[in-house]
Every structure is written in structure tokens, then in C-alpha cells.
Length: 151
Image (cartoon, rainbow, N blue to C red; front, side, top):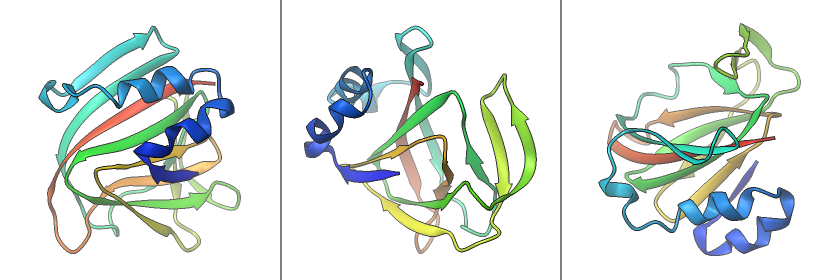
């Protein structure tokens, strides 16, 4: 997992051939004006979703992980906790669904709480189980971009 300021994306361009194009999406000043849904950048190699939702308690939900895609999560408005745990050692709650590229896991160890707010991005690799959309002190409205980068 990587957590950093949007100003530092240049430091990570060498990690994956598609990162430059993906980070370019985050410079689009019209993102907050787009409707919720999926937007294609490079077919199924790079796409993103715009999501508006209300954050939920950390005690609700299960950790998730993906096998085919890297996530870059970036908040445009609001703040949330993203729970994180290394995948190794977690117990499976729902087996991997290859159509949706997702598996769910029980939090059998301590979850690290990462605070996401505008200006910060988080990169989540396949070994990074995560629990997004969680509230800080109370529920709040969030506007988020999640970029999917095919491995």
C-alpha cells in the first residue's frame, strides 16, 4: 500500500507502465462534475469510477482484495477511514469472484486505519486487503475516484 500527496505522483511512475496515464486522470478538473459511474481510459487496462456515498462505521463490512487490478483511491470531497491489512493471514469470508475481481476477508488481526482526504491518494496492490468508505467521528458524504489498473 502507498499513501501520499497527489503532488508526489511522479515518485511512483516507475512502479507500473500504466501509472502515468492513471495519475493523469486525477488532474482532470472536471472529475467532481461527472456523474457516478464507470469511465474508460484505456479499455479494461485502465478505467475509473466516480462514487458518491455516505461513510459507514468501521465495524461494518469486510476487507476486500483484488487479483487482476491495482486500485488508486482518491477523495475529491469529504474524508474517510480506509481500513488496511496485509492479505496474508486473513480468513476468507467470501471466495474470489473472477467476474467482479473481488474476494472478501474477515478482520482476524488489527486493521490499520488510514485517513483519506482530498489531496491524498492511496495505491492498493493485490496483497493489500482494504475496507473503504468508513467514517471518521461520524458519517459524512464523500466524493471519490477509484482508478483500476490491470496488472
